[in-house]
Image (cartoon, rainbow, N blue to C red; front, side):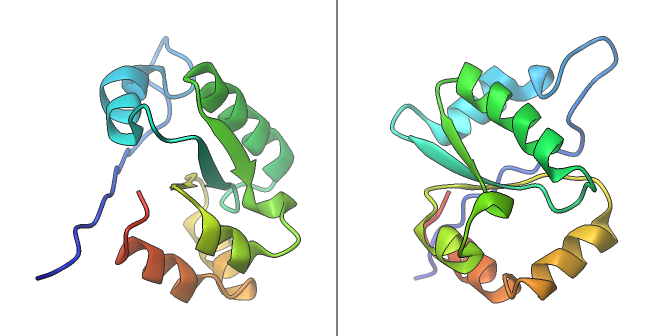
Length: 119
C-alpha cells in the first residue's frame, strides 16, 4: 500500500482586491493544516528578498494560528526539512527556487518528505 501524500497546490497568492492568501486562508489552508498543526517551514527561495517574503508569509500564517520558520534562517536547512511538520514553498522565479534547492542539497530531503508523511 502506498503512503498517502498531502499536497496543497495554490497557483496564486493574491486575487484582485484581496491580500496575501486571503482567497484561500479558510477553506483551503486552515482545512488542510487542521487544528493540530503548530508550525510550518517556509521556503522563500523563489524571490530575491527572502526576508520580506518570509515576513509576509509569517504574518499570514500567524494570523491563522500557525507558527512559521523560514528555511533561509536555518543553520541547517536539510535538518529543518527533516523536522518540519509541514512545508510551504512560496512561488516566484522557478529558476531561482530550483537553483537554491539544488545549492542547498534540498531536492531529495523534500522529495522524501513529500513521499512520506509530512503535510
